[in-house]
Length: 158
Image 1 (cartoon, rainbow, N blue to C red):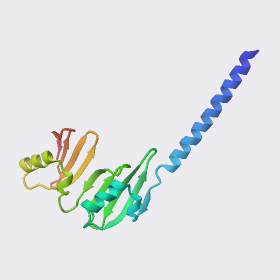
Image 2 (image 1 turned 90 degrees about the vertical axis):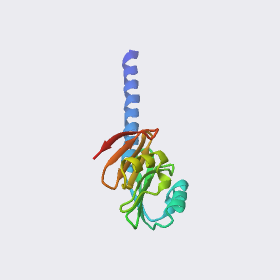
Image 3 (image 1 turned 180 degrees about the vertical axis):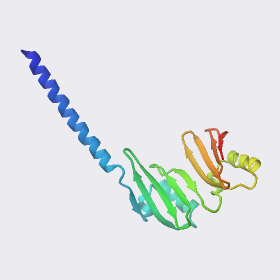
Image 4 (image 1 turned 60 degrees about the vertical axis):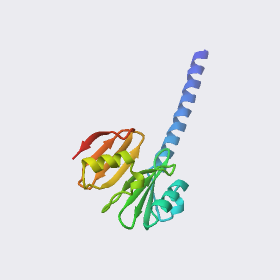
C-alpha cells in the first residue's frame, strides 16, 4: 500500500523540480542575447574605463555594445576611427583591432613583436586577441599567427 504513495510523491517532486528548472532556463535564455548599445563609458567595468583613458585617450567612442550571455557580460567599444577594443566582464582587454595602423605596442608582448619584426619585415600587427590559451594576431598582409601561453608561434594561416 505504501509503494503507490511513494511513487506518487516521487513523481510529484520530480515534476515540480522539472517545472522549476524549465522556468529558470527559460528566464536565462530570455535574458541572454539581449545586447545593449550605449555611448555611456560608465557602463564599462572600471578596469576597462582606465584602459580607455590611459591607452585610447585620442580615440572618440562611437558606441559600446554590451553582450550578455548566460553567465557574464562582454563589451565591444567601437571608436569613430573604426578601431575597436573588446573587454571581458572583469574589464580586461580581450581583442584590439586597428583598421589602418598598428595595434599600440603596449598591448603586444615584446617576444611576439620581436618575432614579427624578424620574420615578417614591414608588417604591422592590425589585430591581437588574447585568451587563456595564448595570443592570436593578424598582420597587415592578412596572415594570422597563433601563439601559445609562452608566446611561441605554433600556427600560421595565410
